[in-house]
Image (cartoon, rainbow, N blue to C red; front, side):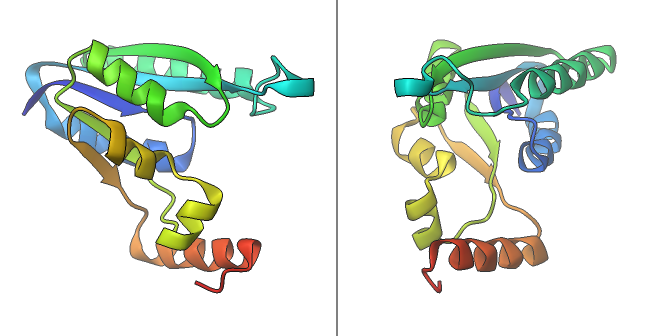
Length: 158
């Protein structure tokens, strides 16, 4: 059991799949710090969020956190604004500030090549986090479909 868990949340099914693991791992006196990174664009689109429906995503995350709290879980939500492409650093920084024992995130299941070409928060997090990272992959069937889709989209033929 862990005392402090940082949980990466972005409103996706991948992040939702990681939640039960965080709930299972948190100790009786522990807490979960759910972290949502509000990514903003720089340059000509400066100040705009990466996700067009960011307000809707945040609202859904807030509702989920309130539901967890009403169910007895000790959960705190932190929404942090960062430049697009920096969620891994934000998660690592919050984990360090909160003295987290583990970071829990969901993954999309991209293969190594697709992950490098498309970018992977989890892959970056594994290199910069001060604590262990639990990466929750998609079920096997979904992972294969995701890899095939990424290969087709990037032309890698992984």
